[in-house]
Image 1 (tube, rainbow, N blue to C red):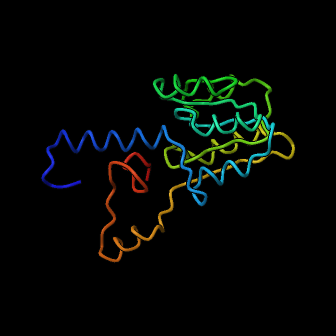
Image 2: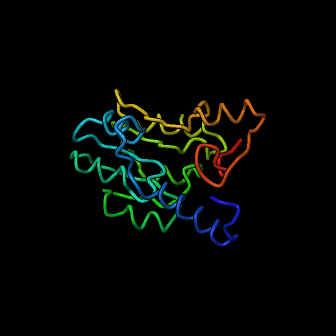
Amino acid sequence: YSSRCSKDQKNNFIKEMRDLKYRKLSRNPWGIHQKILKLVKEKETILEVGCAAGYISKELSKKGCKVYGVEMNPELAKEAKQYLFRLIIGDVENEDTLKKFGNLKFDSIILADVLEHLKNPGRILKRLASLLEKNGKIIISVPNIAFLTNRLLLLLGRFDYTAWGIMDESHLR
């Protein structure tokens, strides 16, 4: 965005970019959303952690999957609910959140751009692994710090966090 924009214009732009991130499925065949969808077989029982507005869950439901979700943002959860068999509104880092699924086991657990927001991702992954069926899998995506733009900025001595994107300031360091 241009330096000629007002502070309100910049803030509105940032809000629109964040909204797009949590509400829109990428149709790019080489993008992570499409790769995740290909990794899930038809009619699986799925847990999507950080399901946002449900755009991935919606596509999984079309494949006949029974999709469960965890989302900590109530506004996004309200949008996602229509695509989920069951939704837990809560923080996955809170032990009580996952306990709400009882003895349920999942064929696949998806964490799409979630781990980088967690204080202790290793502990959460161990807890999630206990919710998998015998041959179940955890599907994870994280931002690609080696993306060309980031490499070029590093060559210039820049490692700046931004309001959104790969270097999103909400990512824990």
